[in-house]
Image 1 (cartoon, rainbow, N blue to C red):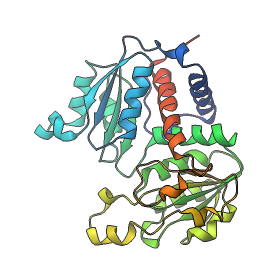
Image 2 (cartoon, rainbow, N blue to C red):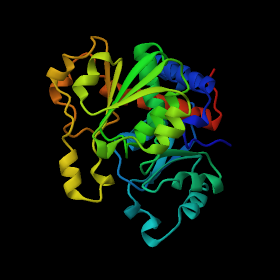
Image 3 (cartoon, rainbow, N blue to C red):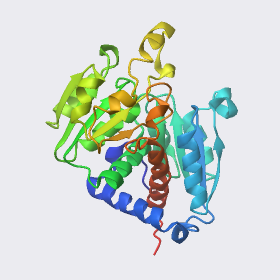
Image 4 (cartoon, rainbow, N blue to C red):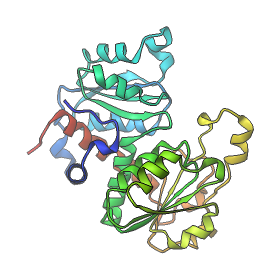
Length: 306
């Protein structure tokens, strides 16, 4: 039995297989419409979510399976003090596979150690978000045709942004990747990412404050929102939340084939006037998230469709 806690749980070769499967699902949806008949996905979301939870449920339903779960810790026995370990033991009696989001780092890993079914980390605090990374990789691979030889700008909340941490960890395994880390000093990428991931893998990167300075050289811009839920001080959040706003004038500085990605939800960091720019890929990215999660469910359940 296999779990997914980090994007590094899959080798580069396995990621390639998963992306090929996702692309086949996109092209041949009817072929997979009954692949999970009789299977049940449990979505255990101790933290609010729209895209991740609904895309998991959409993925399972499109595969012919069913879903059960909760969308908030307040609607579960966690409100009564039940541990994650006890919850997953119980859910293992009801479902065949589980997607768990939790505000505490490492909670899905704790669950996986005692689970009787595959556990997917659907986001744990400010730590990892591996299925968003699978989505991001699939989007880049499908729209750029490659995952190597790219200059990638990561902009916004790089300190608490688990999507950023997961994406960096996954992309350092590909050749010719260069990162431009765009953030205010208060939201710079954590030391463990800088030292243990980037420097340890001899990956070229630079840290800048101004988005305008970075844009002309980027093949891909990954925008993130400043996450109110990660701040302990309201004043700090208010001061940071509109630090970066990508608008039409800034897009004029970018390459004609640069892609703009965003894990969503957005607040103000991408102006709605950018939505109609052909380089804006964030809504297509959300669609790729369904295909990526369909491929992941099939892979972890060991289901092969001929």
